[in-house]
Amino acid sequence: MGLPSDDSNPTPDATGPPDRQTLRLLEKHLSSDSLVAETAFDPDSYEPRVLRALLDTGRYPESTTAVRVDIRWFTTGDFSMHYVEEHNDGESWECRWDRHPNTHNSRLHFHKPPSAADITDLELPSTHPLEVYSIVLSAVEQRIERLWSE
Image 1 (cartoon, rainbow, N blue to C red):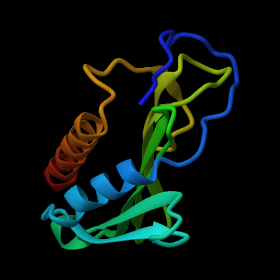
Image 2: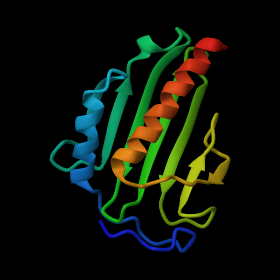
Image 3: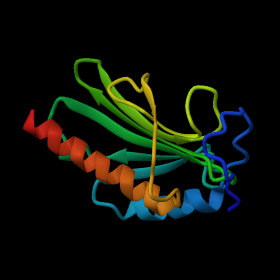
Image 4: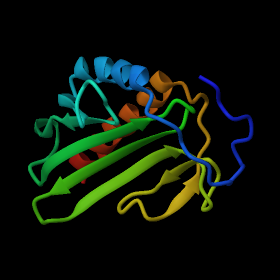
């Protein structure tokens, strides 16, 4: 996986084609995670562009009606992991971990909850897919704990 050496370069280049091997690797890990109820590729498993993980709403308070993580991973090492909660009051709560060329922040950045509209630069110890997966799922577990304590 060839990663660009300058993460602070905001030049808007293409993210490249989907990294199907990485998407399948992540699907294998997600499908064995107790937090995940179901995984699916969009548009299908032959030509996956997005990996969708539907989380087990039984782990959440009753006010949470649906939860998912949409994952895009590209051959350039760029990615997007988008966490979305839907609530019975019609509101959603979401955030996103991104690595892609853009003009709004560094290549590696985080879209803050509750609307994912505010963006901040992000530092990760590694951008290896399994490390990013681990960081995101840990954040999801912390979110669930906070929901129950509210």
